[in-house]
Image (cartoon, rainbow, N blue to C red; front, side):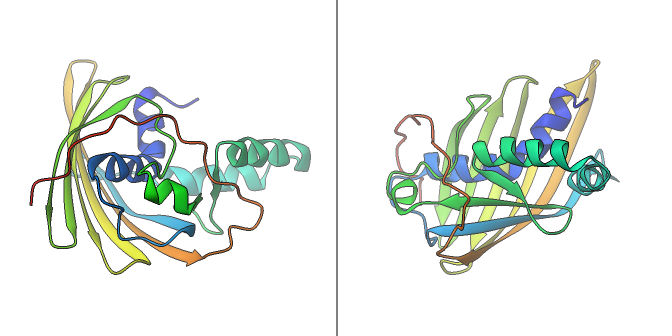
Length: 196
């Protein structure tokens, strides 16, 4: 069973796209199509954390085919799928999602608290609930087909402060999403463009 903290960690790569989309008025510098986000590292209070997606992939490999198919169908229904190796998540981003800055489904647990842009780097501040947390994401786009990001988030668990750090790389796999449909983004409030 996942805890609120582990749920938040699993959701962060996709949530990153939602924060980026909500943070800027202009269309983001990315191509529509199939994107894959790879978690490069996770730390909790300076200590490496296990690769949750790799652990889940191993568990799924041992599941009966019917159960595995059911879980994969549920993920696809939410617009995501596990990549071919642990630590990767794939999602389909439509041209409309880029145009309207609704790249991913926004679940409402996190809100943008301000953004700045310098060249091709966006720095985004956010706050979350369930669990209460705040943090910063710094994402650097490398043309329209890749970006790298680093996220720092502070929260508390049983009264003890916790600092999580994650690094991601994302790459565009192509215009064809196959049978993976774009997420149906929830309405995202219009925010002012980031300060330059």
